[in-house]
Amino acid sequence: MWKYYALLSAFFAALTAIFAKIGVKDINSDLATAIRTTVILFITWGIVLFSSAAEGIKDIPRHAWVFLVLSGAATGLSWLFYFKALQTGDVSRVAPIDKLSVVITICLSFLFLKEPVTPRVIIGALLITSGSIIMLFK
Image (cartoon, rainbow, N blue to C red):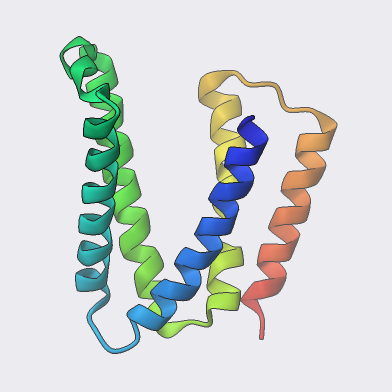
């Protein structure tokens, strides 16, 4: 099932890039990020409240709070820089370079989470890196 969610994530990430490029054209990229974040806030809290998942908030351990806050900060910074890049760059070049995050994630998951790195993972990471580097040049 996770594969379907991952494909849907990729599809909506692609739409995000296209919509964001159009939306950020004539406004400050930080303001655009704030608007986007507000929409996400309402959607996700709506889902949580509708599904009664909010009842579990009191059971969240302290270490989970710390890492969720850190994740939120990293997400916010990622979005701010992504929107700045979209404002001045071609979306067809910005998005693939942004996907270097996949390679960085693989490296960090190996270092910190001790996840296995197989030859298939290494080859995939090298291909993503190569494609991203190619996209840097016009």
